[in-house]
Each structure stands twice: as C-alpha cells, then as structure tokens.
Amino acid sequence: MSLTETMLSRTACAVNGEWIQADSGKTIDVRNPANGDVIGSVPLCGKEETARAIAAAEAAWPAWRAMTAMERGDIIMRLHNLMIEEREELARLMTLEQGKPLAEARGEIGFGCSFLRWFAEEGRRAYGSVIPAPWRNKKMIVTREPVGVVGIITPWNFPTAMICRKIGPALAVGCPVVIKPASQTPFSALAVAELAKRAGVPDGVINVITGSSKEIGGEITSNPTVRKVSFTGSTTVGKMLLEQCASTVKKMSLELGGNAPFLVFDDADLDLAIPGAMNSKYRNTGQTCICTNRFLVQDGIYEEFLERLGKAVNDLKVGNGMEDGVTQGPLIDESAVIRMEEQVADAKKQGGRIVMGGKRHALGGTYYEPTIIADATEEMLFAKEETFGPVAPVFRFQTEEQAVKLANSTEFGLAGYVYTQDLGRAFRVSEALEYGLVGVNESLISTCEAPFGGVKESGFGREGSQYGLDDYTVLKYTCMAGL
Ligand code: ADP
Image (tube, rainbow, N blue to C red; front, side, top):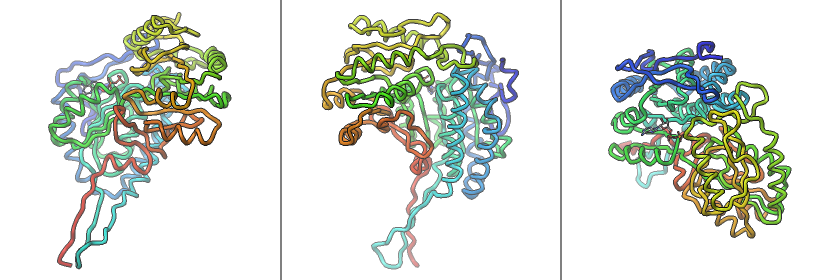
C-alpha cells in the first residue's frame, strides 16, 4: 500500500482553512518504518508560516469562543463521527507512517475519538461558581474562560490520539489551536485537519504546521499571542519548551517521559500479571510513555514469572504492521534501535542475563527482537533512562519496602503497576508510589473518563476526565458591587 492509495493523505499544511506549502518550497520526506521507503513528503515550514498560523488562530478566536458550548460540541461530534467513518483509512495511514500493527492503529483511532466525544459534552459543564461575599450588596462570580490560542506539539508514538486528547478540550472550551505534529508522522495530523474542515470547524480554528521542530517550536513558545502550550514528548524537549515559554509566561501542559515500574509480589495472580505485563511492555513495540520500563519481581515468584513471561513473549509475531497476525511492528527509526543496543550491551556488561532476544531481528531494518533480561540492577541504564522499545529488564526484590523504594527511585513519575492479591498491600503500595497513574492488577488504564498525567519530571497537567478542561481554561473572578 502506498500513500496515494489513501484518500486522506494531504501533503500540505492547514492554515486558516487553506492548504499551504512552505515559503521556501522545501519539503521533508516521511518514511515507512516497516521498510524504510519514502511514502511521501510534507512542507518544511518554519517561523514565518507558524506566525501566520498563530495569527489565523487569533483571528478565529472571537467567533469560536462566542459560540455556545453545545454548538462547538456539535462540530466536535461531527469530527468524531467522520473519523469513526474513516477509521479504516486513518488506521492504514497511521500504520504506514508509524509502523504499529493495524489492529493497534484501529484501536488508537477509537481511543482518540473517545476524547472528542467526551469533551464535546464536557464543554457544556465548564461550570463556574458564585461565592458568598464577605460584604453586603456584592456578588462574587467565578467563571472559566478559554485560555486563548493553544500551541500543540505532539509525538510520533500516538500520532492521532495525542492530537485528539488535546484538541478535544481546547476546542470544547473555545480555544483555537496550532498543531505541530512529529515529523515522522505528519500525515495522521493532516488527515485530522482535512476531516475537521469537512466537519465544519471554522477556518483558522485548527491549523497544522509541519517542518522544523526548532523553528516552529521556537515561534510557538515565544509568540505572545499563544497563551498556552500543550506538549507530549521527551523530558529533554519538554524542559526546553518550559524554559522557552518562560519569557512570555505561558500556561503549559507537559506529558513527558516515564520509567514505569511493574511490581509483582509473591502473592500476585500470574494469570493477571502475565497478560498485564505483555500489554504494558510490548504494546506499540514498547514505544509508549506508560510502557513498563522495569519489572520488579519478588524473590519467591521471580523464576516462575520469568518462565511464564518468556512463554508469552515467544508468541509475539514481529513484522510489518500491515500483515495479519503481526503484534510487534518495527521501531520508529534507527536511533531507537541503537538505544536498545546500548541498553542491552550495558546490561550484559553488568551481569544481566539474556532470557530472550537481545539483538536486532532477522528482518533487518529497525526491527528488534522482543527481549527479556533477568538479574537487572539499579546500576543499569534501564533504571535511569526511558527504554522506549521491546526490552524488559526484570529486577529482583525481597521486601515490600525495598520494592517501593526501588519503584520510586527515578526522576520520572508517570505510570506504575502493582500486582498483589493482598488488599492491604494493594492500598499501601499504590499510595506509596510517586506516580500520576497507578494500575492495581491491571495495566490498561488509560481512558477518556480518567485523568492522565504525571508527577516529578514526567510533567504536569491532566488530560481527559472532568479535570481535563482545567488545562485549557483560566478562572476569572468578577466582583459585582453597587447592586
Ligand atoms: P520523541 O522522543 O517522542 O521523538 P521528542 O520530544 O523528540 O520526543 O518529540 C516530540 C515532539 O516534539 C515532536 O513533534 C518533535 O518534532 C518536537 N520537538 C523536538 N524538538 C523540538 C524543539 N526543539 N522545539 C519544539 N519541538 C520540538
């Protein structure tokens, strides 16, 4: 399948309802990670085009915010419905540029759309309050207002869902957006822009700019018209954006890296823990920010866990995500494979025991074998860095106290998982974990109804749920006197 076979592929940027090329006429190639083929190109835009997109968003703002939440909600629902209708094609486009198995891509479209549906309704519940005044004849009114033009910078691992999760609440409360998708996966973003146009989203409300991260990011973070930046990506880039946003004091949401621990106690039910481990480690070939980075397993169950995990990993099928039955696609690019090689070499050097995999896959390219490494230690790179690939290091612990300490000994704090049958322990450990999300006997916990986000250097802000509007609204207190 090639790009031209999909009707939703757009090779221009969306600015103010028009499809534009870069001022320079330059483009960047997009490759299929399954075989390295160039599938198409998108404009290499920079500062100027971004400034125009921001100006278009600003111009679109007054009319968009003046609509009722229900009117905006109707438009968001139309976008939702169109995306569901085009689910198959959007999924194919995603697999083509991202590499994930088609079944996962279909799942991601559904997941992304669920945020549009949720926020189409939730916008109607952007309640304020009336506070009893400490003075006579005065009223104290608190309203929630749209923050303004939002800059959205998204990663390649969930090319559609990360956009939906941000535009859902932004649009619902009345904010226009300028989106910069990852250069590896721009087509999924441009397809959303096309469908938004068909859904009747007014010109300038959703703009998508592809091209130079530095230039586009630089303009988004320094332009005073942008009042908020929402970013999902690496902690390194997130910190840079936070610094850049300081000069104009923008509101921010940062969904950054993780180093998720997956704790398995002696009393765990392995019939739950093994499927949980597989989902949390190998989904999207290990390339999600809530993927397990470290398995922490209690001594008494350690060998049995390893053996059963090994059997499950053996059933994974590596290959092109377009092929039936494939559960593990390629890694996004060569640098991702090099990172696996570095972490595995480091583990081996420090006494790690390779139980499965441990090298590039025979398919070549950016395929890497699903890997399990036993006898992992705190000195190894996995303990400090995010892995973002199909490598599972398994650490051993003796006591609950040790497990909690080990789990928290990272600067990250996004997701953590606990497997135990002991109710008291489930409460104690989940409370002790310094993480924004905790799964107890479950590893698939993301859903539009729940708040998603981290603590520590995994960032701040929450996406989804009743709290998800907060990131896109500001409180205004009005004191009415002379009544
Ligand atoms: P990942 O490790 O997921 O590739 P990155 O943080 O590198 O994460 O990328 C996430 C998003 O941030 C992408 O859209 C990328 O293009 C963008 N990005 C990378 N560097 C910068 C930068 N200097 N300024 C703004 N955006 C950037």
